[in-house]
Image 1 (tube, rainbow, N blue to C red):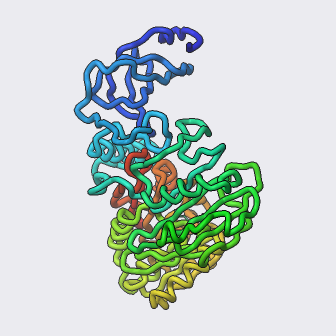
Image 2 (image 1 turned 180 degrees about the horizontal axis):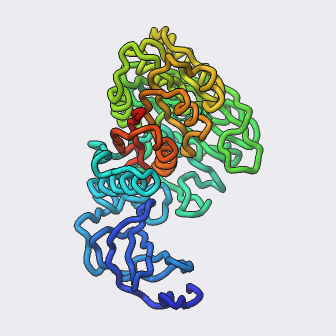
Image 3 (image 1 turned 30 degrees about the horizontal axis):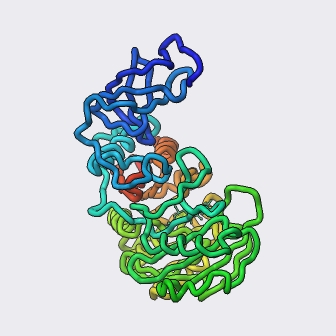
Length: 436
Ligand SMILES: C[S@@+](CC[C@H](N)C(=O)[O-])C[C@H]1O[C@@H](n2cnc3c(N)ncnc32)[C@H](O)[C@@H]1O
């Protein structure tokens, strides 16, 4: 039972609310006497009876006890674990409503934090034709004989037999490992699969080293496996990978094609998890600026995928990345694809940029992690009057913050959201900026 009766709302009573909007993470918003309720699994347009589950000073969280009027955009989630599993957030919405939610979220955030006229500049979110089983990487925690995804808001595991966003064979490998006695030593299993080639990499993260014999005849069961790595993480922390890794089978790499090039991917490097949407995202990124004979910087470049995709059109490309294994792969990838007008720098983008940015740099493309770009990095872009700036972002809040920082010097010409992570509330964007 929820404690307390706020003077604005009685938290012990059930309430009937109309859902008028969504929070950034997909909860339905309804109001009682102007007091906002954030309702799980609710759809805009619905009238629902709810009970309060958590009361805060200025808002409350609630769960539906009865749907009085069902929303036209409600979907019957295909997943039997949807109510308990924390992996997906929007499966109760029809896919077109998920896309509308993401478009609105991007527009609203860029207007509020970025201060731009979003109606005119933000395109509709680009969705997938078949928005299922799209992930090319899974990380599954193991504990006490269970292997699955975390329950909503907890570290309890939901033991899953099937999943509608993960790769099916990758999940079969997880189930296979969980049936072996070695499962007691496993903390997490990461499986990466190439989208266009039948290749899989398995990374078994354990408290202490395991032997090859402890994983049985895994390549006979799953002939697509080209690499098995044992990573040791003996620290009590939420960081997935430990510092030491041993190769059990193959090498520390598997291959994939993307946007016309071949890539070697190692277990420590970032690689976009939805290959089909990434190809659309890269196409937009590259087509949004005229690269012909231009000098381009690809900052936060990972294994070099954006820079290598640009290199055919550009005069020269510089990549910057902080993970050494990724930079090594980027150099190999450039060579493998016959690209010789690209150079990679190991280091922090905010530190390295000033050493390579000169008057001859025409275009800077960034694809930073969720925390966005450092002010120092953005200041270099401003100081060097870079004409064209393309910002690929997986977090619209930090994109908006960084656009705001640049706003006295740069105009936003266009923003395109991409649905890289269907059924979750996450959204990717490509923003095109031009020096004023
Ligand atoms: C979202 S990923 C993008 C990678 C690549 N552009 C792609 O599309 O696959 C962000 C990358 O930035 C790297 N990174 C994080 N902080 C960095 C920093 N301060 N300087 C340079 N690279 C950084 C990460 O290691 C990661 O490879």
